[in-house]
Image (cartoon, rainbow over all chains, first blue to last red):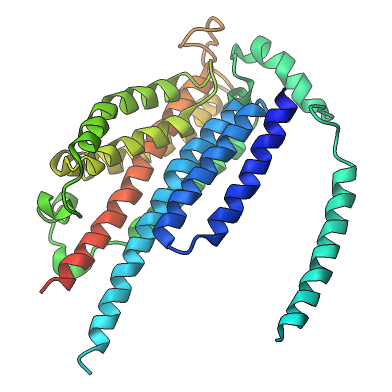
Length: 89
Length: 257
């Protein structure tokens, strides 16, 4: 039973990793990253590592996407400002 | 490079990768079999020696506590680095930290969200705080521990931000106490380790009485260190989030004419 569940989850993770790479929009990609992290946590739980699963949920599904999102927002603003500075010349 | 060349390069790389992967996978232990000697030994000894029911935390905060101390200070220096890089420029700084965020309304980013999202995020806030504290203080009994609890605690103010309760959000994340707690958590870990030195034992020896197995106040230094890590991680992540948001918003303010 666990083996079937584990293999199924691993397949799902492979599919979602492919989807994550194939996503074009960065904001959507961040959400996909969060979902991917959640799937990894589920996998750790199925493979009897609840401690690692909890760390994975907090880091992979909350903290990492949050940081990526904040960094992307910051870069977008900087890009917009640079474009604005170029325009008048 | 032509398409056919690229395909050939991929084929060679994939073959090599497949070969190395198969060679490596051949020597893996069978499904569900564990071969190392230490895991079994610690799983049997941790409850007896340290009065913890969660062996993983006994390992992280006690048996290899020194490594965890290093990881703790990696996070601490990372937070310090972020704060140093994103420190406010001279024009908008003046005095205290809590004045630099601008007016609370400046933390608002977008048009209003649906009321359902607002209501649920506000309702979940209390649960998130309690769950984070529970997680950080019960690491010795159940899976979890200071690190996980700390991140949950740091994520709680973000729920307020999503719910657009910006005033409360800013009051929490820009509180001067956050900075103090970040340092205090990191220092607490080192001081607990040094308390053992003062009592004549080795660094990070479990010197606090172990208590009854299964109690919240058991397992000696493991529970204490876990709580310290929880405080440090919660404050550290809150600081990073606050610095980033303030940076983004100050840039946004500059863009507006």
